[in-house]
Amino acid sequence: MLRKVIMVTDNEESVKNAIREILRSKNKGHEYALDLTRIQDKERKTAIMKRLTRL
Figure 1 (cartoon, helix red, strand yellow):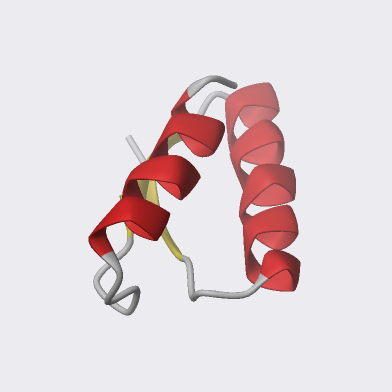
Figure 2: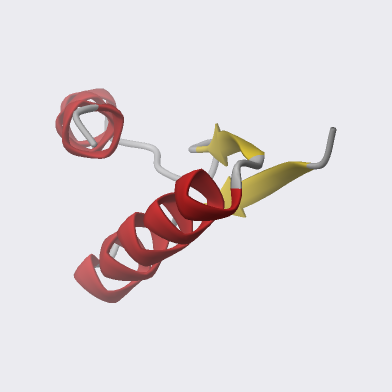
C-alpha cells in the first residue's frame, strides 16, 4: 500500500496544506505519515499534532 509522507513546517499555510493532503489521502485510501521534525517549539508541535490527528 502507498504511504505518503506529509512534511509540516511551522507556518499556518503548511498546516492548511497538510490538512488538505490528509483528507485527499484518506479519500483515496492511502496511508500517510506526518513529518513534524522541522518544528522546534514542543508546545507548538503538540498543538499542530492535535489538530492534524483529529481529522
